[in-house]
Amino acid sequence: MPPTLLLIRHAQALHNVASDWSIHDAPLSELGEQQCLELQESLKNSKIGNEVDLIVVSAMRRTLQTATIGLDWLIKKGVKVIPDAGWQETADKPCDTGSPLEQMKKEFPQYDFSSVDPSYPDKTTDLENNPYAFTQKAILARGQTCLEDLYSRPEKVIAVVSHSGFLRTAVCNRMFFNADWRVFNFDEGAMEKKPGQFILKESEETEKKGGGMGRSDVGVFGVVEGDFPPEVETEQAKEKGQVKELGEANKQKPSS
Image 1: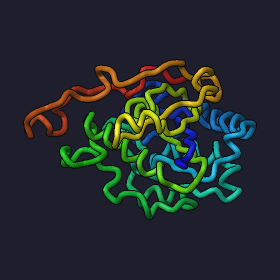
Image 2 (image 1 turned 135 degrees about the vertical axis):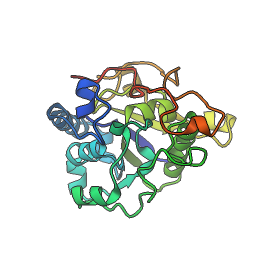
Image 3 (image 1 turned 180 degrees about the vertical axis):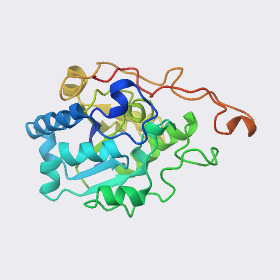
Image 4 (image 1 turned 90 degrees about the horizontal axis):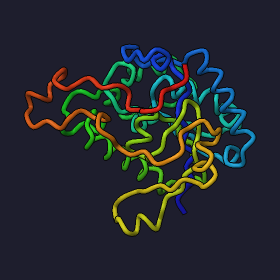
């Protein structure tokens, strides 16, 4: 049986505070650190939080910090943490571009980065073939790859710490407030009707409540205009700087 997924958005980071997308691989703000403690308390008091037997986390700074603080009690119990380039944010702005792996190893020596794709954090070269490129095709395909990787894992409950834009557009079509969480299962019925696609269905509790902490918008939110750069036809137009600058792929304003 495929695992249940506990999907978590990172806590507030510095780029969220002033919508400053120029902050490279933005760390958590002071409020974000407090939100991590609230996340920890919420999950400790939930049944699903105490059933987590694997943690997968985007290899970016704010998600690693969120996992380190918010899932601290699980990590201390020996739950394995796997940093994964696949769960990083969508855009190619500095705030949504990761740091070199050698730097992350120094900042987070407690984690094993050996399985992280060595091409991380490049998003700008070979846009046709780069799985992390800021294009709709690449991002939707990356979402499917991430889900496929988890589908056949042996763990029963997997916590994933990721980003609002990627979760909404490529994984589950839901809004996530900073440090809020939602529970999903693989929708086997829907997947039978669409062979080759990995589709999630949210638990009734977090869907109706608007996340496990009740801080996220209720409803289904798919891809909308402005989430991705326009499709381009020529190699010249694909060069960096040739597409319109977009904001973070999240229509719900983070807390300030």
